[in-house]
Length: 115
Image (cartoon, rainbow, N blue to C red; front, top):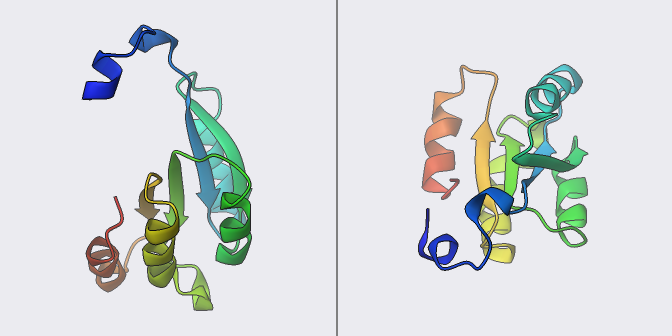
């Protein structure tokens, strides 16, 4: 628990679910991830996108706590997106995921300050 949760007037078990947004360009991977998270009382999937452009547009309109971002988004520059999202939305936690085999990108995502 953080300091804010300790001093909250609401008990910790009544706090709202974490709002999760998925940005994954592979339909099967996106569906599998959504399936894993669906039905959990502590998580709420508030949106899904298969492009970084759509994600950036939607982040302007909806409240998100955690962004799950596929680091292998093709030509779109996922690492640059991490840096941009971090600057525009500093409260959003970014969880970078990959299908494996991209060690260089994983290290770069850490350096780009993904959570």
